[in-house]
Length: 490
Ligand code: ADP
Ligand code: GLC
Image (tube, rainbow, N blue to C red; front, top):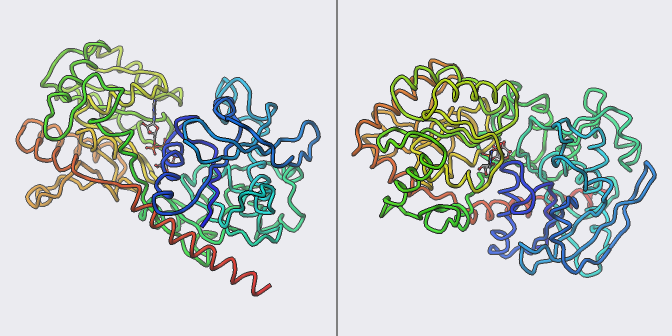
């Protein structure tokens, strides 16, 4: 089986969040499961710089005029020998600023033009543009690749498509006139197509046309089919003939394990945690936190957006700090959240620290140093930071929702007694509930033997990519079968 992975991000080249971790790790896991798969990425500066031995296989459309993007194949340096595909267009991708927005953070006005070429590239490959490789399935990740299933199906191609929703809150919505730039037939416009309340929706295009749809945890797969969390697309999801699969993300333990992590000042594992104490001391010393070994170090490594629920943390912080402990926040984004944590840091020097940055090395060092990692998300499709926390011997404290609910066992009296607890959860999204969970964590911290036991259990959890890869293979097989059944029906 040959699978093309179409996405906007992949570590170690381009990353704004967990999508990149997933797209960076899935191809290897699939390869181990016997699936030949190749990446298709937009040619952002870092991607183009990593592309070796480039060969153009197609010139893509450019309905708005100007220099047409090219589909180029070559080797992407960090991914070994497997060829990859890159859409090369300096006009579209090589700009100052972020992947999706200008230096001020505002979304680029032409994002529909910037991501539609992923669909044209997949369509060209499905038509045989690269005589050496024809995909059986295109796996489209998130809205950036949402037009892929639509483009394939309107071209009448036999290639199957799978759409994975990493986050339904980001849909790729554009004004109706953007449709003219998408190189899709007029028939694609409509309630069964890319139209969503008078706008173009890349996400809906993917959900409508893919032969199989999935999300990144079983619980989120249920949640998005409910109006409360379906972001207006719950009906489309409920109506999908193949249902919505929930395939939990894995952890790439070659990158995210304290025994091998090159970013850490000292490595460690569950058998010998002295390195963890050293990582904590090092972070406290280097970042200006008080060098208190016994203080519970709480950490947040997160995009600062409303999804992540950190406004609750700001509400409960004064009370939490009154019981002792320290807080480090690594993240940037929403101005009000940045200001909230900055003023907490100012009010509690040496106890609260805001690191306003996106810094991969610091993220690793913080998981290694932390005792408790806070993930109070309003919603969370999967969440990776609670998984990294457990691997690094920090207990997660989470809102019981989405992938957080699927991966963290709350420390109740029963789960502690039964040896099941791996973290702390709160069940209602409000300050008193989070406060109560934090208080439980703080009380358990004062019982070192119990804390150590729970930490051992958390560190022993395994969220392997191989299991997820098997599930994706089953989904690809389903999509291929559905595609050929549709072709037979004409
Ligand atoms: P999301 O994709 O919604 O942001 P995830 O938990 O799935 O949430 O993934 C977040 C990823 O981004 C993790 O790899 C995490 O370590 C990383 N990350 C988040 N904020 C930062 C930051 N400020 N600096 C470095 N890495 C970060
Ligand atoms: C999204 C989600 C996050 C998930 C990640 C990778 O960014 O917000 O929950 O872990 O994608 O699938």
